[in-house]
Length: 115
Image (cartoon, rainbow, N blue to C red; front, side, top):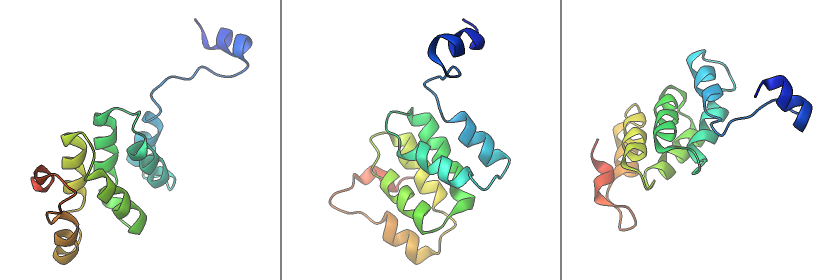
C-alpha cells in the first residue's frame, strides 16, 4: 500500500511501530533534540531491548542530571543488554558518583554491576 493511499484513507502519513530511527538519526547528527528523543526511546518499555540499549549508549556524551537519572532507572531494566549499556554509559562520571550508582543494593540484581 502506498503512502498516498494511506494518507487518503486515514488522513495521515503511514506510521510504523518503530519510532526510534529518528532518535538515532538525530543523535548521529548531534542535533539538539537528540537527547529528549533518546530519553523517550529508553523509557518506552514497548520498544525493543536492543533499541533501548542503543539509546542508553547514545546518551553517554549527553550526560546531565536527567540522563543520569534515566540511566540509573535503566540499571533495573529486565533485559541485561539494556543494563549493560546503561553501566557503560555511566563510565565518564567521576568514580565516587559511579560507585554510588553501581554499588550493590538489596533492590537491584547483582548482575547489574558487570560491565
